[in-house]
Image 1: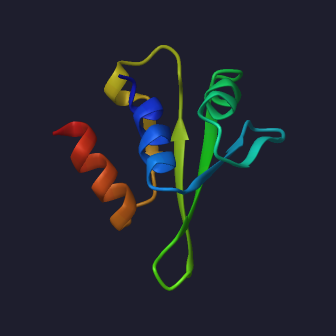
Image 2 (image 1 turned 90 degrees about the horizontal axis):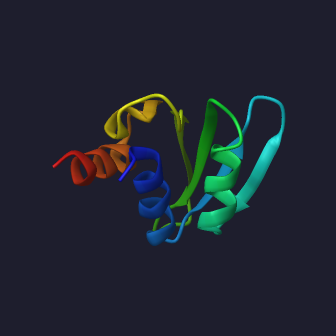
Length: 96
């Protein structure tokens, strides 16, 4: 599975939302719809994912990822991302 699709599924399975910025507009905003998010990502060459995360104390956290759906190996489709615990956990499960 492509890394960006796994990241979206992982984020939604945790109960978080995803916004997709396509370089010009917010193509999806705090969405919980896998299909809406994937359609927004795949409508452009590169997209920014903003992962909206709340912890047990309801403190807002944000993770970011730059993704490219086309022309890369599956594991390379998450081009860059925030370095934090959430992204480390995602990366560990995806690349293991």
